[in-house]
Image 1 (spheres, rainbow, N blue to C red):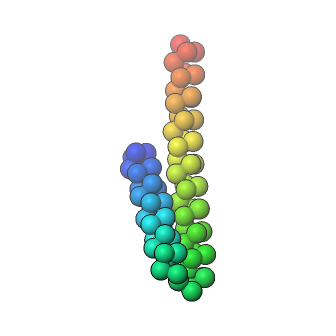
Image 2 (image 1 turned 120 degrees about the vertical axis):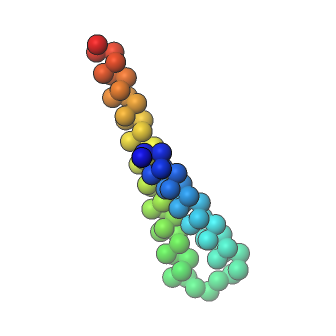
Length: 69
């Protein structure tokens, strides 16, 4: 389940980044669209960071349990 969440978050971040790049490349005058895409990208990157941190926390907690035995 975790792997699917992380992969989905990475895919959303990649899609937002590509959409943002296309909008910038087309010299879009739609500043609101660009701002929304930048926010989506920031949100997606934040989710990726959070999920990676959760994974690292789980590894640390699992390691602590193993060493306590």
